[in-house]
Length: 403
Ligand code: PLP
Image (cartoon, rainbow, N blue to C red; front, side, top):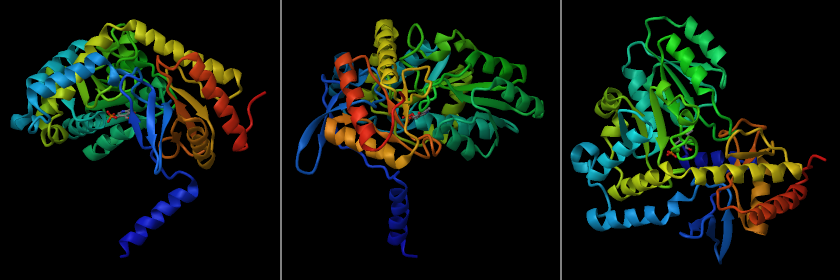
């Protein structure tokens, strides 16, 4: 086998389709969010980031940075082992307490990323629960899909955000089988929210446990920022809430919050928890500080929502085809991979605006888009500049705006 040739061919196929992923080489500037420097071969240039999942800029919050610096000075760089082998530091314990309190659950368990949290928790639960069937929303994230797949449990896919279809499927399943209903609260590419209460009601009627990914909601929704389940007043109906420390919390890591027995079960059986080095204590300290700030920052959340509404308003007025997002995510439909990439190249090169093209397989073919995430720090002036730049780029690639 000519391995090199195989790799080259596969890459050429991606390029031919216009969905080869190129990464901008950026250096974020602490204290100057959302601005960054782009490294090019021969120069460096300033850019404004419009697609960060550090939704509130907490990754540059001075108190978060100070907590991390202090913990590095105190404890050093890494955790020194898996959680089992000397890697459970005081900071991990404090962070898990903070997370349990955030979600009003008995316990929490931290992982090295949100992806690993989903993969491990779903693999462990679905493989160990007797005759388990997983009912999975058709738009679920890759980390949930992979976790379910790896468990080898039976999977049934229900229509997106459709409790009636879920009910039809639950009704048809053997009553004595263990069941998990897995879904998200904010779907990150369309920006729609799920009907958590009705889904949990249906699940409970058929004896299913509920597994909710709040990755794009923690820090951003609810009185204390615990997510959409808190916002909708239904957190107690959800058996397991999964979240990330890498997006609105501004650090890295993932977690589940649930009953003490459930967390202990995943801690004791989950290979993605047991067999990997724990997060550095400084990360745990930064995340805990960030969460403690987020709990008390409804004004920051309000500002974030206001900025997203404003961005949708300005883009809508200019005639751009917006997908009907209910959240802070602003998806602009392009509908074609090549043009999507051309648009973002023009925005970056000609206007210093960094926004990633979103192509298949992240979204279905024909729904390629720009996914814009305005933060509380993207002001009106920056937004007008974005809209005008996009208008010019839109025309340059031969796209038309609504009248
Ligand atoms: N769940 C959803 C819905 C996501 O969009 C993502 C990442 O984008 C993850 C889980 C994984 O989280 P993390 O980035 O912390 O690995």
